[in-house]
Length: 333
Image (cartoon, rainbow, N blue to C red; front, side):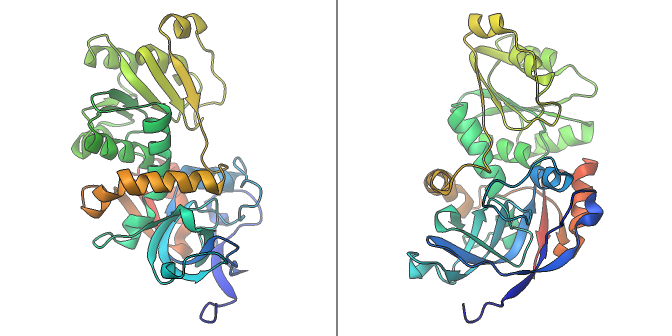
């Protein structure tokens, strides 16, 4: 820890409110605990949960830093007890439970992924949160496999673009929804087989037409509310519906007879509160299954815009405006 300062610059608002509360402050540099590493952060991804936390709608789980930020990329500069010395100095990206909007963050070593040659720190910082989320929900909980057709809402969000990219690699036919013709076109360029403008088209009718009435094998939903019964109409027999957010409402009316008759599965998850052991297991699986595609240059996140840490307020305003395509990233240091 000799070359690591005692204090750092971070975004750590004491209250809740609009983007304007995101101003740089000084905080102590965290100390890596047993099994943890300390990362000097070069870049941090901006995600919807960060916005919800700022608004007071998504408090950090117990033990997590109050500093927002769920994914980072940087260099390991210090090690906690029982961590392999070979990790010191390694460039990594990591899924964190908080603390990303800062010059330094401590995280379980098992949650780190190596940054291969050819991947920039900005790109690396834009991968973990969406990759962990899409992999665990679309491929593990929804059992999406080669040849499946899936429906993904928010097609040009960070989650949506990652789902399109992974679907292209693993042989899925991905149908997305988006809020403008321009976003639909962008989704198709990325590899979506079909893109539905939900403001002008009934996505239920469109999915039925696209699939010849058979429906899709899985739906990845971040809207909730009245989208859920409509999503169920899009599913084929034995279809799987996975909820990962409730931007449109936390309650839904479910047609149980339809669930029973067509043997549908409804599930969902939140990743942030899962323990380090689970996240480390996912990281191991991603290193085996997805990371070779990253190393080969076949998987690169879609970057919408990059802001310096001091302009975190502008980054949040950009996300809330809803005009972004892909990931918003903060650069640090």
